[in-house]
Length: 615
Image (cartoon, rainbow, N blue to C red; front, side, top):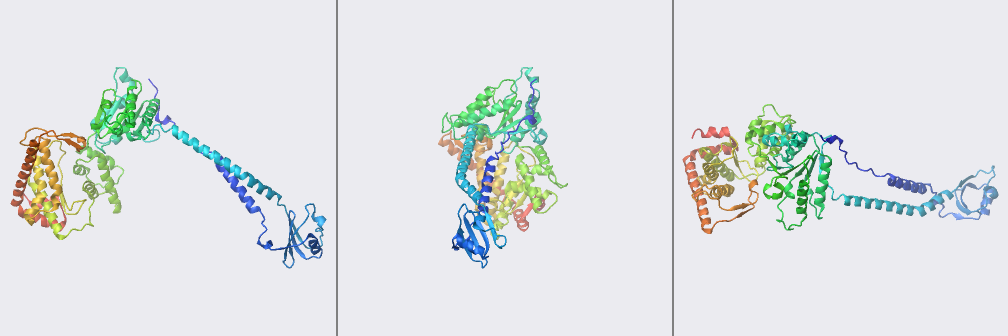
């Protein structure tokens, strides 16, 4: 059995401390300069215009007691008489005080001798040596910078992967709510990293690469870290974009360095996030087969082929664009296991909310299951954002706990945008908006295949002046033809309510009509729900996985295109007539509910049902 390298034993790279020599030298130079400057005795302004006299006259004045003080600096004498007159004189270098006769103790004259030779020596030394020292210091400083640049140039091809482990708290499967099927598949990887000999004895080969596929925010990176935490092995994390640089060959060099690090710390996990940045199909770019991205991909493929059965290194990658990946990445022997991480269902959403609410002061009356029901289609990141927004809202209100109302408002904010109370529509616009939204709600309530009405509001949110919120009772994965037909009718309810009440339409129905037209066209071209039969018209090229068609190839004739347009028109006209019949039949209810909505601005599900009764 191979000894494992504990994450705690991995030696972190220590930054070499800066040498104090340079700082010490600078401090010495500054101190010496200050000493010379402040210890010099300048002649000063007081002796600048003093009268210069011969030394014989000074001797005479001294003998007569006229001098108060004499200051001798080398050969210069600064004389102050008792009447404060200042004079200058010079003596011979060989003359001492005794030779000049200034040693009479009976005469009260202050004699001071200042030796400026030392100061002059340091001054001349500083003036001569300081430039040389500064040049030497500058030379060593520049050499150090050059060495740093050289070392950074040599490390340019090193991997930038972040290592998780050691003292950091590991992530486990308990912290990843939902995704039970994905956890079951990844438990095999964890078991292999813990006890590889159990599988090698049986001749089994655990997949070298695991591709995590899912929409943004579903927890792919968190799942990869949980695998490393459960297996208690080093976890090298890097983004696909960090491989690619403007210099050719750098990405391939970083790939080699990353795999070498992982092998030295085996068993370990390499995680490449957003691998589609380097793993796209080769030959499809402007650079042909020789650009930097494709060389990086080739190196990844080569390194994965170089693994033997005893390497104990697992490569995990994450992407939300599996349709653009190169086929060589997904073949057996490389990323031969694909783990799908879907958006959470009702139970998983509740579990995710429980995990994210542990560190928040949630009120006891909060019903997280009800929140999970309102957030159909939300990813794990969306649910975390909802609870974060609710915590911010509660803090703004100086509340000690997060209430159900705070969470409900946060759900609406994340789903439909914040309320725009500063946007003040006119009375006419409020009235039109009220009838428009009640038209949606009334038609949706009457038709059996529409989701129940949860809330109606004429408070502006985002770009809309009002909103009608239909809330599904359960998660749906299949949609029937009757479901689509009823939804088209509900979308047309707002436009027709305006026409029935005000005898004209407004621009507020533009988005509703776009969505209705899109559903009708998909019924004809994608789902075969029309008289044209079970045929798919047009080939999609792009990320249909994300619900986006970047391009669509027309593979039918102009005659067929005219039939498709006619069939879409028939579906919309049929829905239009059906919706008109419903609203005319319940016109009194339309007016009644709209007037109540104008008073309250918002109607809940219970208030709406109470107003319309049984119809």
